[in-house]
Image (cartoon, rainbow, N blue to C red; front, side, top):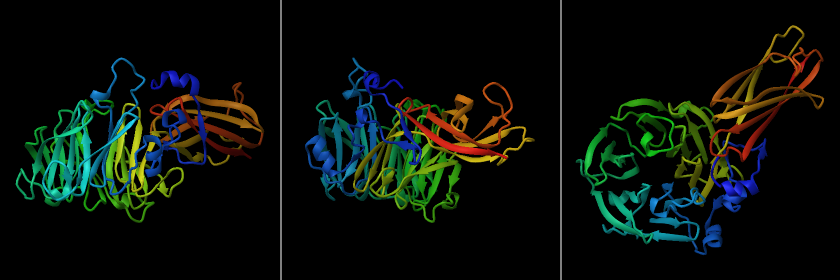
Length: 440
């Protein structure tokens, strides 16, 4: 991992966590100053400005070209975070300044919003938002003095191609086509950067939020233009092709560990994995690019790996930085890795056993190191930084020790399994899993 090259020489640490969920991890101190949760009091302490978090909606974290110092890489991971809060846009300028644009109002002017829902910002400084109960999408521009200036808008309540009915989520493609969830018209409206309608995807029931997956937006290994949408009263995930065709679907019954599902906002990471906030369960669900379920992270509360009604989510794919808006503020994570032993085959060893299959489930692409010991004495380093993909992985032990001799002694053989992510938290974090197999 190349970020913070100078800092890492001084502060590089490896966090060893076994009990806590680690699909997402808290960044090390030098990257977060110890504040990975930003509530009103933290904002006041760090920025010297009081912020009341209320009615938080969509968020967008990115590197704006106007704020990028091309002469150094030291600021590469210092991002601008735009969020909708209290009928306003709130955003930071570096680490020193917090700015606000807009106010609550039904008047149709450039600086009044009424229950705005989502925001999307391009690296060139185009700011798009859905002003939901004013029935419009607005485009603003980020100026050189770090202010937002009105550019244009689309909307007015209606059903024709230039009108909208309670627009909600939106996102953009690499060529800055804007995809709008026109929720009450049951459609996705696609516009160009001038907000002129180009095409419409009809028969999308109550589209709520959207993420446009586009290889040309950078920092993505998947070369497959598509979009993922929350629809049908926030209970349904759809994967759409470039012309609106349904390629995959997720229904509430597909997540068997939850009685009720409340999908909210969506984003995706460097490998095309889909992350979706769930407000009623106060967690984040993770799926692969084909909407195959991987894992869920978090629960309701104020402690570690906990959220209070998460809403927006934004992932800066270059470094795997994850920002989550919740009812009381924001949280900041890196993409980590978690895993567990699903089973051993066979479940016990005997003198006639020819080999052991370790079924290891991982939530992220990672390197796997397995060390086997007995009574504290090393028996075998079975793997060393073996690369494995997300999901169920099978690793075989031939029941030989480090010298190639077949083990004969009965008793417990302890396994220490270390997982290291290939992305985001690489070099800063590892997950340790301890297990054992018995020979009888």
